[in-house]
Length: 355
Ligand code: IPM
Ligand code: MG
Image (cartoon, rainbow, N blue to C red; front, side, top):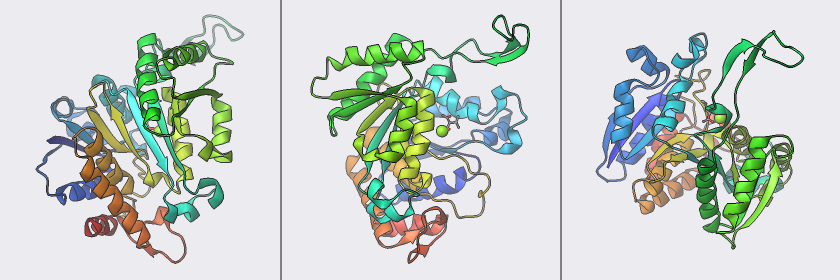
Protein backbone atom coordinates (compact mmCIF):
# COMPACT_ATOMS: atom_id res chain seq x y z
CA UNK A 1 0.00 0.00 0.00
CA UNK A 2 1.71 3.11 -1.24
CA UNK A 3 0.69 6.35 0.39
CA UNK A 4 1.78 9.74 -0.95
CA UNK A 5 2.32 12.05 2.01
CA UNK A 6 1.94 15.72 1.11
CA UNK A 7 2.26 17.85 4.27
CA UNK A 8 2.10 21.28 2.57
CA UNK A 9 2.23 24.56 4.46
CA UNK A 10 1.47 26.19 7.78
CA UNK A 11 0.38 23.61 10.34
CA UNK A 12 0.28 20.95 7.57
CA UNK A 13 3.66 19.36 8.40
CA UNK A 14 2.91 19.23 12.16
CA UNK A 15 -0.46 17.56 11.87
CA UNK A 16 0.56 15.17 9.08
CA UNK A 17 3.48 14.03 11.20
CA UNK A 18 1.06 12.92 13.91
CA UNK A 19 -1.15 11.09 11.42
CA UNK A 20 1.90 9.30 9.98
CA UNK A 21 2.92 8.33 13.52
CA UNK A 22 -0.52 6.80 14.04
CA UNK A 23 -0.36 4.94 10.70
CA UNK A 24 3.04 3.54 11.60
CA UNK A 25 1.70 2.35 14.95
CA UNK A 26 -0.92 0.11 13.30
CA UNK A 27 1.52 -2.68 12.47
CA UNK A 28 0.70 -2.66 8.75
CA UNK A 29 3.20 -2.45 5.89
CA UNK A 30 2.79 0.97 4.33
CA UNK A 31 5.15 2.50 1.84
CA UNK A 32 5.09 6.19 2.69
CA UNK A 33 6.64 8.70 0.33
CA UNK A 34 6.70 12.40 1.04
CA UNK A 35 6.71 15.31 -1.42
CA UNK A 36 6.37 19.09 -1.22
CA UNK A 37 3.12 20.77 -2.20
CA UNK A 38 1.60 24.25 -2.04
CA UNK A 39 3.94 27.00 -0.86
CA UNK A 40 6.47 24.28 -0.04
CA UNK A 41 6.22 23.03 -3.63
CA UNK A 42 6.72 26.55 -4.91
CA UNK A 43 9.81 26.99 -2.73
CA UNK A 44 11.22 23.63 -3.81
CA UNK A 45 10.67 23.90 -7.55
CA UNK A 46 8.82 27.06 -8.50
CA UNK A 47 5.35 25.52 -8.76
CA UNK A 48 2.74 24.72 -6.06
CA UNK A 49 2.15 21.31 -7.63
CA UNK A 50 5.59 20.15 -8.81
CA UNK A 51 5.55 17.51 -11.54
CA UNK A 52 7.24 14.96 -9.30
CA UNK A 53 4.60 15.52 -6.61
CA UNK A 54 1.80 15.02 -9.11
CA UNK A 55 3.50 11.88 -10.45
CA UNK A 56 3.82 10.50 -6.92
CA UNK A 57 0.16 11.27 -6.21
CA UNK A 58 -0.84 9.47 -9.39
CA UNK A 59 1.24 6.40 -8.64
CA UNK A 60 0.12 6.05 -5.01
CA UNK A 61 -2.88 4.07 -3.77
CA UNK A 62 -3.93 7.00 -1.61
CA UNK A 63 -2.80 10.49 -0.69
CA UNK A 64 -2.52 11.94 2.78
CA UNK A 65 -2.62 15.70 2.51
CA UNK A 66 -2.04 18.38 5.14
CA UNK A 67 -2.97 21.88 4.10
CA UNK A 68 -1.74 24.56 1.73
CA UNK A 69 -1.62 28.33 1.80
CA UNK A 70 0.17 31.20 3.44
CA UNK A 71 -0.45 34.92 3.24
CA UNK A 72 3.07 35.45 2.05
CA UNK A 73 2.11 33.93 -1.32
CA UNK A 74 -0.97 36.11 -1.80
CA UNK A 75 0.84 38.43 -4.16
CA UNK A 76 1.89 35.68 -6.58
CA UNK A 77 -0.08 35.29 -9.79
CA UNK A 78 -3.01 32.94 -9.24
CA UNK A 79 -1.48 29.99 -11.13
CA UNK A 80 1.43 29.93 -8.66
CA UNK A 81 -0.52 30.31 -5.42
CA UNK A 82 -0.51 27.37 -2.99
CA UNK A 83 -4.28 26.75 -3.36
CA UNK A 84 -3.67 25.73 -6.97
CA UNK A 85 -1.96 22.60 -5.66
CA UNK A 86 -5.07 21.17 -4.07
CA UNK A 87 -7.29 22.34 -6.92
CA UNK A 88 -4.84 20.80 -9.40
CA UNK A 89 -4.71 17.47 -7.56
CA UNK A 90 -8.50 17.30 -7.41
CA UNK A 91 -8.76 18.03 -11.12
CA UNK A 92 -5.84 15.94 -12.44
CA UNK A 93 -6.85 12.89 -10.43
CA UNK A 94 -10.58 13.46 -11.05
CA UNK A 95 -11.33 13.44 -7.34
CA UNK A 96 -14.88 14.63 -7.80
CA UNK A 97 -16.58 13.28 -4.68
CA UNK A 98 -15.76 15.01 -1.43
CA UNK A 99 -17.05 13.50 1.81
CA UNK A 100 -17.10 15.80 4.81
CA UNK A 101 -18.70 14.11 7.79
CA UNK A 102 -19.63 16.39 10.68
CA UNK A 103 -19.89 14.35 13.84
CA UNK A 104 -20.27 15.93 17.25
CA UNK A 105 -18.53 13.66 19.74
CA UNK A 106 -20.46 13.59 23.04
CA UNK A 107 -17.35 14.81 24.89
CA UNK A 108 -17.22 17.92 22.72
CA UNK A 109 -20.81 19.15 22.90
CA UNK A 110 -19.60 21.88 25.26
CA UNK A 111 -16.93 23.04 22.82
CA UNK A 112 -19.41 24.03 20.12
CA UNK A 113 -20.56 27.62 20.04
CA UNK A 114 -24.10 26.27 19.71
CA UNK A 115 -26.26 25.05 22.58
CA UNK A 116 -25.48 21.44 23.53
CA UNK A 117 -29.04 20.25 22.78
CA UNK A 118 -28.74 21.54 19.21
CA UNK A 119 -25.53 19.63 18.44
CA UNK A 120 -25.37 16.63 20.78
CA UNK A 121 -25.48 13.40 18.79
CA UNK A 122 -25.03 15.24 15.49
CA UNK A 123 -23.93 12.99 12.64
CA UNK A 124 -24.32 14.45 9.18
CA UNK A 125 -22.45 13.94 5.94
CA UNK A 126 -21.82 16.63 3.38
CA UNK A 127 -21.12 15.31 -0.10
CA UNK A 128 -19.55 18.12 -2.07
CA UNK A 129 -18.92 17.99 -5.82
CA UNK A 130 -15.27 18.87 -6.28
CA UNK A 131 -14.40 19.07 -9.97
CA UNK A 132 -16.81 21.56 -11.46
CA UNK A 133 -18.91 24.63 -10.75
CA UNK A 134 -17.64 28.19 -10.57
CA UNK A 135 -14.33 26.87 -9.19
CA UNK A 136 -13.27 25.60 -12.60
CA UNK A 137 -15.77 27.06 -15.08
CA UNK A 138 -14.39 28.89 -18.10
CA UNK A 139 -14.37 31.64 -19.16
CA UNK A 140 -13.09 33.59 -16.20
CA UNK A 141 -10.90 36.58 -15.72
CA UNK A 142 -11.05 40.35 -15.88
CA UNK A 143 -12.13 42.32 -18.92
CA UNK A 144 -14.02 45.32 -20.14
CA UNK A 145 -17.72 44.69 -19.40
CA UNK A 146 -19.31 43.81 -22.75
CA UNK A 147 -22.83 44.87 -21.68
CA UNK A 148 -25.05 45.87 -18.77
CA UNK A 149 -25.26 49.05 -16.71
CA UNK A 150 -21.49 49.20 -16.41
CA UNK A 151 -20.67 48.46 -20.05
CA UNK A 152 -17.08 49.41 -20.79
CA UNK A 153 -15.99 49.38 -17.14
CA UNK A 154 -13.41 46.88 -15.90
CA UNK A 155 -15.06 43.78 -14.43
CA UNK A 156 -14.09 40.46 -12.89
CA UNK A 157 -16.07 37.38 -13.91
CA UNK A 158 -16.30 33.63 -13.35
CA UNK A 159 -18.58 31.02 -14.87
CA UNK A 160 -20.82 28.66 -12.93
CA UNK A 161 -21.49 25.54 -14.98
CA UNK A 162 -22.20 21.85 -14.52
CA UNK A 163 -22.33 19.17 -17.19
CA UNK A 164 -24.99 16.49 -16.92
CA UNK A 165 -22.59 13.53 -16.40
CA UNK A 166 -20.88 15.54 -13.69
CA UNK A 167 -24.10 16.03 -11.76
CA UNK A 168 -25.19 12.44 -12.34
CA UNK A 169 -22.00 10.93 -10.95
CA UNK A 170 -22.08 12.97 -7.75
CA UNK A 171 -25.81 12.24 -7.42
CA UNK A 172 -25.11 8.50 -7.50
CA UNK A 173 -22.35 8.84 -4.91
CA UNK A 174 -24.66 10.81 -2.61
CA UNK A 175 -27.66 8.47 -3.01
CA UNK A 176 -25.45 5.48 -2.31
CA UNK A 177 -24.04 7.16 0.79
CA UNK A 178 -27.57 7.94 1.97
CA UNK A 179 -28.57 4.32 1.38
CA UNK A 180 -25.98 3.26 3.94
CA UNK A 181 -27.21 5.81 6.49
CA UNK A 182 -30.63 7.23 7.44
CA UNK A 183 -31.74 7.28 3.77
CA UNK A 184 -32.42 11.00 3.76
CA UNK A 185 -30.74 13.14 1.12
CA UNK A 186 -31.00 16.92 0.90
CA UNK A 187 -29.82 18.47 -2.33
CA UNK A 188 -28.76 22.07 -1.76
CA UNK A 189 -29.00 24.56 -4.62
CA UNK A 190 -30.09 28.06 -5.57
CA UNK A 191 -32.64 26.99 -8.16
CA UNK A 192 -34.81 30.04 -7.46
CA UNK A 193 -32.12 32.19 -9.11
CA UNK A 194 -29.53 30.11 -10.98
CA UNK A 195 -29.94 28.10 -14.20
CA UNK A 196 -27.07 25.82 -13.16
CA UNK A 197 -28.95 25.03 -9.96
CA UNK A 198 -32.25 24.28 -11.70
CA UNK A 199 -30.37 21.91 -14.01
CA UNK A 200 -28.69 20.29 -10.97
CA UNK A 201 -32.04 19.89 -9.25
CA UNK A 202 -33.74 18.32 -12.29
CA UNK A 203 -30.96 15.74 -12.58
CA UNK A 204 -31.11 14.95 -8.86
CA UNK A 205 -34.82 14.24 -9.26
CA UNK A 206 -34.14 12.04 -12.27
CA UNK A 207 -31.42 10.02 -10.50
CA UNK A 208 -33.65 9.65 -7.42
CA UNK A 209 -35.89 7.28 -9.44
CA UNK A 210 -33.11 4.70 -9.16
CA UNK A 211 -33.09 5.01 -5.37
CA UNK A 212 -36.75 4.76 -4.30
CA UNK A 213 -35.80 3.94 -0.70
CA UNK A 214 -33.94 7.26 -0.29
CA UNK A 215 -36.06 10.29 0.55
CA UNK A 216 -34.83 13.22 -1.54
CA UNK A 217 -35.57 16.80 -0.58
CA UNK A 218 -34.31 20.12 -1.95
CA UNK A 219 -33.24 23.20 -0.08
CA UNK A 220 -32.01 26.60 -1.20
CA UNK A 221 -28.50 27.29 0.00
CA UNK A 222 -29.43 30.37 2.06
CA UNK A 223 -32.05 28.36 3.93
CA UNK A 224 -29.62 25.46 4.31
CA UNK A 225 -27.11 27.80 5.94
CA UNK A 226 -29.82 28.83 8.40
CA UNK A 227 -31.14 25.31 9.06
CA UNK A 228 -27.60 24.07 9.75
CA UNK A 229 -27.41 26.27 12.83
CA UNK A 230 -31.12 26.07 13.70
CA UNK A 231 -31.74 22.32 13.55
CA UNK A 232 -28.68 20.54 12.14
CA UNK A 233 -29.83 17.13 13.31
CA UNK A 234 -32.69 17.27 10.78
CA UNK A 235 -30.07 16.54 8.07
CA UNK A 236 -28.62 13.17 7.20
CA UNK A 237 -26.74 13.46 3.90
CA UNK A 238 -26.40 16.78 2.08
CA UNK A 239 -25.29 16.86 -1.56
CA UNK A 240 -24.27 20.11 -3.16
CA UNK A 241 -22.01 21.78 -5.69
CA UNK A 242 -18.42 22.83 -5.25
CA UNK A 243 -18.87 26.38 -3.98
CA UNK A 244 -21.94 25.88 -1.77
CA UNK A 245 -20.25 22.77 -0.37
CA UNK A 246 -17.11 24.73 0.46
CA UNK A 247 -19.10 27.22 2.49
CA UNK A 248 -21.57 24.85 4.16
CA UNK A 249 -18.89 22.39 5.19
CA UNK A 250 -17.02 25.08 7.15
CA UNK A 251 -20.28 26.01 8.81
CA UNK A 252 -21.06 22.37 9.62
CA UNK A 253 -17.57 21.98 11.05
CA UNK A 254 -18.29 24.44 13.79
CA UNK A 255 -21.27 22.39 14.92
CA UNK A 256 -18.82 19.71 15.99
CA UNK A 257 -16.92 22.01 18.31
CA UNK A 258 -14.01 22.84 16.07
CA UNK A 259 -13.00 22.64 12.44
CA UNK A 260 -9.95 20.91 13.90
CA UNK A 261 -12.09 17.78 14.24
CA UNK A 262 -13.29 17.45 10.65
CA UNK A 263 -11.69 14.92 8.31
CA UNK A 264 -12.42 14.62 4.62
CA UNK A 265 -12.07 12.25 1.72
CA UNK A 266 -11.96 13.20 -1.94
CA UNK A 267 -12.55 10.20 -4.15
CA UNK A 268 -12.39 9.32 -7.83
CA UNK A 269 -14.71 6.81 -9.47
CA UNK A 270 -12.54 3.89 -8.31
CA UNK A 271 -12.35 5.08 -4.71
CA UNK A 272 -8.77 6.17 -5.00
CA UNK A 273 -8.64 9.18 -2.78
CA UNK A 274 -6.98 12.15 -1.25
CA UNK A 275 -7.48 12.55 2.49
CA UNK A 276 -7.14 15.87 4.23
CA UNK A 277 -8.45 17.73 7.23
CA UNK A 278 -11.24 20.13 6.21
CA UNK A 279 -9.43 23.01 7.88
CA UNK A 280 -6.70 25.05 6.26
CA UNK A 281 -3.04 25.75 6.91
CA UNK A 282 -3.64 28.20 9.79
CA UNK A 283 -0.34 30.09 9.32
CA UNK A 284 -1.13 32.14 12.44
CA UNK A 285 -0.53 29.13 14.70
CA UNK A 286 2.00 27.24 12.54
CA UNK A 287 5.13 26.07 14.32
CA UNK A 288 3.67 26.64 17.77
CA UNK A 289 2.86 22.99 18.35
CA UNK A 290 -0.72 23.73 19.34
CA UNK A 291 -2.68 22.67 16.25
CA UNK A 292 -5.24 19.91 16.61
CA UNK A 293 -4.04 16.82 14.68
CA UNK A 294 -7.30 14.88 15.12
CA UNK A 295 -8.89 15.92 11.80
CA UNK A 296 -5.80 14.60 9.99
CA UNK A 297 -5.67 11.43 12.09
CA UNK A 298 -9.37 10.88 11.35
CA UNK A 299 -8.65 11.54 7.66
CA UNK A 300 -6.07 8.73 7.80
CA UNK A 301 -8.83 6.52 9.21
CA UNK A 302 -11.07 7.43 6.26
CA UNK A 303 -8.18 6.54 3.95
CA UNK A 304 -7.90 3.08 5.50
CA UNK A 305 -11.64 2.58 5.10
CA UNK A 306 -12.29 3.96 1.59
CA UNK A 307 -9.07 3.46 -0.36
CA UNK A 308 -6.95 0.85 1.40
CA UNK A 309 -9.55 -1.76 2.30
CA UNK A 310 -8.68 -1.78 6.02
CA UNK A 311 -11.96 -0.87 7.71
CA UNK A 312 -10.93 -2.61 10.94
CA UNK A 313 -7.88 -0.34 11.23
CA UNK A 314 -10.10 2.69 10.55
CA UNK A 315 -12.35 1.56 13.40
CA UNK A 316 -9.32 1.23 15.69
CA UNK A 317 -8.22 4.80 15.00
CA UNK A 318 -11.70 6.22 15.41
CA UNK A 319 -12.13 4.37 18.72
CA UNK A 320 -8.75 5.64 19.87
CA UNK A 321 -9.77 9.22 19.10
CA UNK A 322 -12.99 8.76 21.10
CA UNK A 323 -10.94 7.35 23.94
CA UNK A 324 -8.54 10.29 24.14
CA UNK A 325 -11.50 12.64 24.19
CA UNK A 326 -13.02 10.57 27.01
CA UNK A 327 -9.71 10.77 28.83
CA UNK A 328 -10.04 14.55 28.69
CA UNK A 329 -7.19 15.40 26.32
CA UNK A 330 -7.90 18.60 24.41
CA UNK A 331 -5.96 20.86 22.08
CA UNK A 332 -6.54 24.60 22.48
CA UNK A 333 -9.32 24.76 19.88
CA UNK A 334 -11.55 22.31 21.78
CA UNK A 335 -10.56 23.09 25.36
CA UNK A 336 -13.31 23.36 27.96
CA UNK A 337 -12.90 23.73 31.74
CA UNK A 338 -11.81 20.56 33.59
CA UNK A 339 -9.94 19.14 30.59
CA UNK A 340 -6.23 18.54 30.04
CA UNK A 341 -4.80 20.91 27.47
CA UNK A 342 -2.19 19.28 25.24
CA UNK A 343 -0.19 20.22 22.18
CA UNK A 344 -0.08 18.62 18.74
CA UNK A 345 2.56 16.00 19.55
CA UNK A 346 1.05 15.02 22.91
CA UNK A 347 -2.33 14.56 21.24
CA UNK A 348 -0.74 12.23 18.66
CA UNK A 349 0.99 10.32 21.45
CA UNK A 350 -2.30 10.01 23.34
CA UNK A 351 -4.00 8.52 20.27
CA UNK A 352 -1.18 5.98 19.89
CA UNK A 353 -1.39 5.09 23.58
CA UNK A 354 -5.14 4.60 23.15
CA UNK A 355 -4.56 2.33 20.13
C1 IPM B 1 -11.43 23.53 1.08
C2 IPM B 1 -10.58 24.75 0.89
C3 IPM B 1 -10.18 24.87 -0.57
C4 IPM B 1 -11.46 25.01 -1.38
C5 IPM B 1 -9.17 25.98 -0.91
C6 IPM B 1 -7.91 25.85 -0.09
C7 IPM B 1 -8.85 26.03 -2.37
O1 IPM B 1 -11.25 25.88 1.34
O2 IPM B 1 -10.94 22.42 0.79
O3 IPM B 1 -12.58 23.65 1.51
O4 IPM B 1 -11.96 26.13 -1.55
O5 IPM B 1 -11.97 24.00 -1.83
MG1 MG C 1 -13.08 25.44 2.33
